[in-house]
Image 1: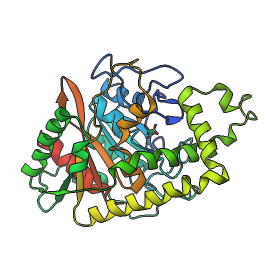
Image 2: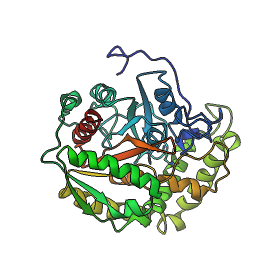
Image 3: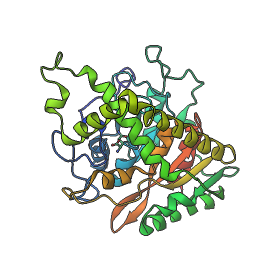
Image 4: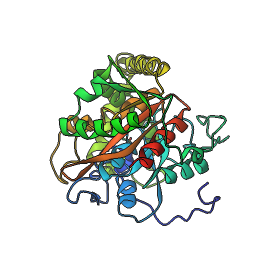
Length: 352
Ligand code: GLN
């Protein structure tokens, strides 16, 4: 679609293997540097996408976001990243990580890049059963807006509690700018924050295991288990274990139930407000090569997996810096309210 609209494709970018990661350190090709904070990870899994934008190598890059892989690197590299409503962009051509959560979306240096990209790629695709046939807005129509009068935005105390203080301070200043532009700020609470990571990873492991059964040696000469990296192998092994009949009811089906509860809670939160605003990632990007346990690495995803579990649109826009390192403001909305996020980001950008 980008080519049809005369987009010039200049390359393919680095990422964590099978999009399973938040640092780009599990790439077969090795880690990518963060151009905005040299020596540190660019985030992931679409780390190359964010780094290429931050280094001004291209105007737009296209990443995938299953649990934050567009927003996390956008936050760490100081660029804008957008995960559309689940189904707003076709997944055709994407290799599955976790098919019920995967979503394609754009990264760019400014909101207009995101809007132009969305106008091009957010389309109903009759060859892809999860795409939505919806009345798509013109995403560029709000680019000159300077007021958020009439918009209700919410901060969630549980999101603040899991985030480092310095990041919260920077994000709060950004939220104040939205209020200065006319938005009404309210506080909401979310009871299921502790349920999000276990639910996300359980679904991810099982769906990834299932998606990788096609790499059985026929097409590439080796079975995936024989050639993949450590994190991919971990997911396949645990996913295979959970998928066994006696465990499926105990874990996977429970995770699907937990996901419905999370989705219900987020949807009802969004009935009374237009947007939920807060930090994108609770920690700063670590130095490349820092040894982290899987659970420590997964903790980076706590604030981003929620949008995927709920199927809602979510974006990250640079909020400011902590110790010279970029920090993102995350903005989330109801399904198909993607334009409201673009509007809030445009107003934010126009007031800078
Ligand atoms: N970091 C998360 C994971 O490893 C999200 C990955 C993604 O969004 N592709 O599953």
